[in-house]
Length: 453
Image 1 (cartoon, one colour):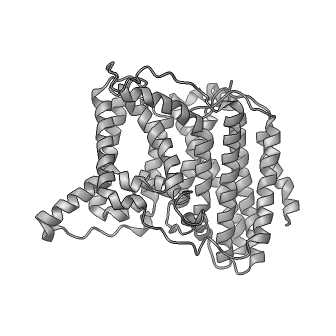
Image 2 (cartoon, rainbow, N blue to C red):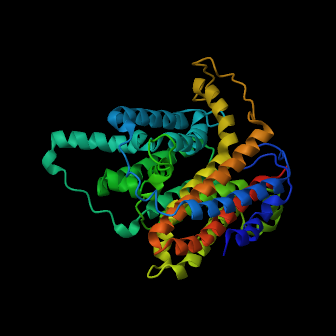
Image 3 (cartoon, one colour):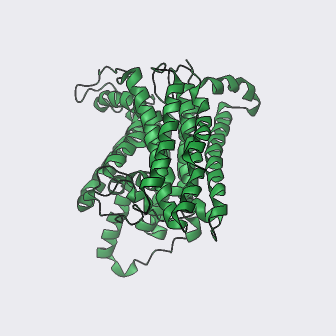
């Protein structure tokens, strides 16, 4: 099937995004309306994806990313003790604010730090500079300090860690990110500072236990949800001095990786869905499920399932062309292609939220406990919402989605050239991945253009 014949398929995938709609907010922040009719962006996105698919087939005849440099030592690693101490100090400070400060979601600094600076802001930092969380991780800092002390006080008593079970893969990380997403999007106490502080302490305790059992490197690379989450984004960092996307191409396949990325994309999608008119219209009909927590939990599960089904369809379409490879092997082999898409969804859904919350954090820094202090003279900072404006925000969102999916196509094409016996067969297999990318782009554009007034 030629790229020309694929054009109707691509356009069909973005039809939901073409319906004109206006928006007041999406995800955790947004602007009202779109600067031009939504179908213009839908057509443009479809054309870009199909053109990218055709260009890759013609201009990319051999693997380029698979032979890229392996993970380099991060520049922050040279000052690891200092960065670790900083991360531990910040963690202790914001948790103390949550426990001892005012129990107001907007008056205490902890909720803004967790949901804006940490969950979103650190993604942007990782996309620029690489996996900085590996150096800042407070539990890794504690583990390193404990091992340093143990080697000097009782070196003979330090036994070797247990081997990390290969079948676990990245499933513990996937479950951790799912749990956090549920807290953020469904849990009724998600904004309570003391609750967040206790959850943070509980998570840190689990990570320390995992490190104690399986070792720092093995657990952090597979079991630590946030460590894996930020590490995946760090693999496509812009300023790491290596070919773009090559860090994702050399990601070690492991069970649960595709599931983790589907959780990342699906939970962000639900955050966007929860602000749309169709979802709000559906809510009265879901009253039989009981609490709003149950309804939101169902919505999160449904959106993750949608993302997983679309990916599974793409893998199933490739399977007949992959001689001797099972669907499970293909799903693991192409899981890394979802990393740029997950990054695109974060940028599209949370960029305006982060800009608004960054202004709030300036004020909260002067009064982190919410007790009326003004340490730096910024407690009265005025927040100016939607600083990018309607057009700027929409262009950022659409641009992020399209570029993220083009990046996914490039990674999939490069991997196909390695796995399939000839370039012609590789191109045929990627017709299915084009369908996956168009489907995800269509979903993202529809979410952005269907937000409730």
